[in-house]
Amino acid sequence: MVYHQGMAGFIDRQGQWVVPCRYESAGHFSQGRAMVEQEGLCGFININGELYIPPRFDFAYPFAEGLAAVERDNFTGFVNLEGQLVIPFHYDFATGFAGGRAAVEKEGRFGFINPQGELVIPYLYEDTYGFWNGLAEVVYQDQRGYINAQGKEYFS
Image 1 (cartoon, rainbow, N blue to C red):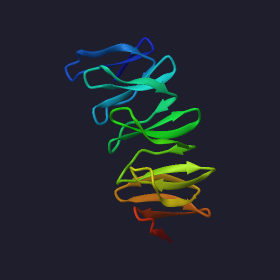
Image 2: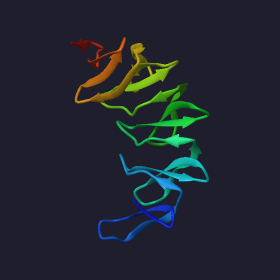
Image 3: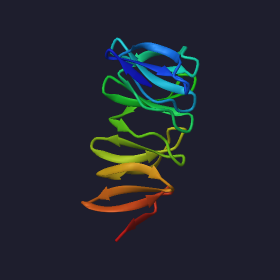
Image 4: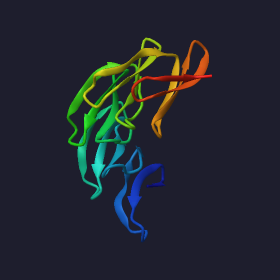
């Protein structure tokens, strides 16, 4: 990804243009898609530079495990690689999926969902950074610790 005269585009490893600088902003490719922003809305292009998921979101995060968190009207949901909304806009915030879990926030508390959108770890936590290598760092009652994908807590 490169920026030229305030616009984002993409070049290949040889420095040849793949996508001209025509986007307001762009993200890195993940799972064959990259977020692009056009006229204040976000969508995704494929590796050939073709607009694959038209801009219709206020913000979009990179794909992970086949899903991308997307925001619209101050709520977050998830789309699949085809751009279909598969987890509705229910959340105040969400992280990307890692290890089959995504952190989701509602009313100031974080819980975790699976790729089907089912809440598998309840809204207990004041903060989290999502899962990494099988554990998520969480804050519960001002105490920092970790949980595993089943919700088992590890606090010292």
